[in-house]
Each structure stands twice: as structure tokens, then as C-alpha cells.
Image 1 (cartoon, one colour):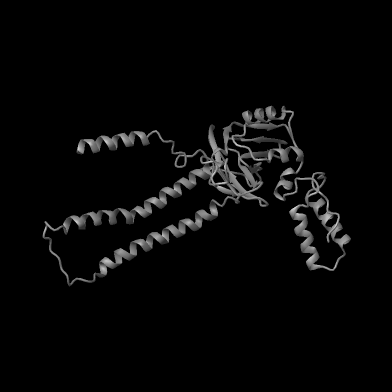
Image 2 (cartoon, one colour):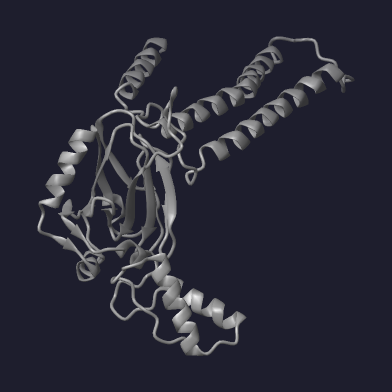
Length: 334
């Protein structure tokens, strides 16, 4: 019997040895710090869990019927035992609270990176690579505004270069997650979330949506690669060679639900299309959310006429996004 159990445990261990524990062995500094937090929290909790399991087994064995162990039915209190029972968990909670407070601020996804790895600080004036990610049904769109390119289900970033993801969605809430890179963050329609991260070693991985969003959810995956700066520049050149253009009309087609959508590349991207996606005004003639909210705010707090309000909004939008032909201009504020 013991031999069979031993063989079963050995077989199970050998099978688990083949698992890719990418969450606990990531390739990015942010994900690595998060993995360290998991280990620390687990160790702290085991300080209580292990003794409790041991004592449960020990008392069950000691006070079994056949042992006739000494038992004092009048015993009801021990100050020393109470201090241990309540003191140890309290200290662990205090330590976990301090760790949570510090790490919550340090690993805030909106917080710009101050290092790319332990012992490798970043200059205060460093410029991160900006990638705009949009969760569609059921695929991922990545826009590189500085490079003027876009891809579908393909994400490439250079090694040791800070990346600032600006994330949104087209229809329903999703969750952007690349396990070796950083933690999960939600993508929501009409909103923009931010994730700062860095990859520290080259490789190929899978990213996906970690929030159920419908029939094609299980296939909502994309290829992610960490490459050298030279390889990234070469890849950008290859994407630019594509004749496809991501404009408003093409985005409306791309937004339609598809399952197992193949990777695509767009060599040209319409200016500020991500702004229109976030504000849900890609379709021609649609009022942008930020325009409407500004109009409502001005109208509720002033006695200006509709024409004066429209003029103020248009001037504000030109200040926010100058030379932006892609943004619709407000013509009335009723």
C-alpha cells in the first residue's frame, strides 16, 4: 500500500515538474516584485497554518481512545497560551498590512517606473514606449502612436525599455494580462486605464483576457515578444511596409465580433483614433463623450448661449488635441 502511494506521489511530482510556472518565474521586473509578494504572504501565513495543522494531528493522536492520555476537565485558561494564540496572528496581520501599504503604492500600475530591474534605476526624464491597447470582440488591437503603426493579436516591446500601456475596450469589460510582464488590469469601454511595465529578457509568451466577455473569450489571446531595440526597430519597419491603413472605417469593420482572428498589421494609423475609441465616437457624426461632458458641465454652471458654449468647447478641444482632423467638432449644445 505504501509503495503504491509512493509511486503515485512520485508520478504526480514528475507531472507537475513540467508545468511552466511563469507567474512565479516572470521575465519582467514588476511581475517579479509581485511574485515576491506572493511568496512573502504565503510564508507569513504558513507560520500559523503549519503549527495549527501539526497540533490538530498531534492532539487527535494524543487523545485517541486507546492512548488513555491525561485529561483535566477543569482546565479553562492559560495566559501564556492566549498570548501565543492571539499575539502571533496579530503580528502577522500588522506585517502584512505594512507590506500591503508599501507595495500597493510602489506597484501602482499608474505609477511611472523608477527602475527597470534591481540596481538599474531610470533617469527622471526617461521616455517610455507608449502602446494603446483596445479589447475588441474577441481580439486585441495594439496601437503604437509614436511609431504610427498598429497590430492585431501581436504585441512586441523592446527589452529593458519602460512601456506605458493605455488600455480601453470597445463593447464590454475585459482584462489585459501578460503573466511574465506585469499584473492584470481591466479594460473598460468609455474609460482609459494605465499600466506601466518592463520586460527584462527576450522571449515569446502569450497574453490574454482574464475576464469573461462572451463566446470567443477562450480564444482571445495574442502573441507577445520581448526583443532587443535593434530587433524592435526592424519589426517596426516591417509593419510600416504594410499597405493597410487603420482609419475610422477600417476600425468599424475590425470591431465586429470574430473568433480566432489572425494577426494583422497596419502600416498607417489615423491620428488620435484611440481618443475616438475611448470616447466612443469613431462612427462619423457621433458626439464624443468628452465633448458632451464638457458641454454639460459648462451649460450647468454658466448662463452662456448655445453658440458661446460650442465655441468654448471647440477652443478647448483644439488646445487638447491641436491639428486633429479626426476629432468631431461640436456645432451645437442644446
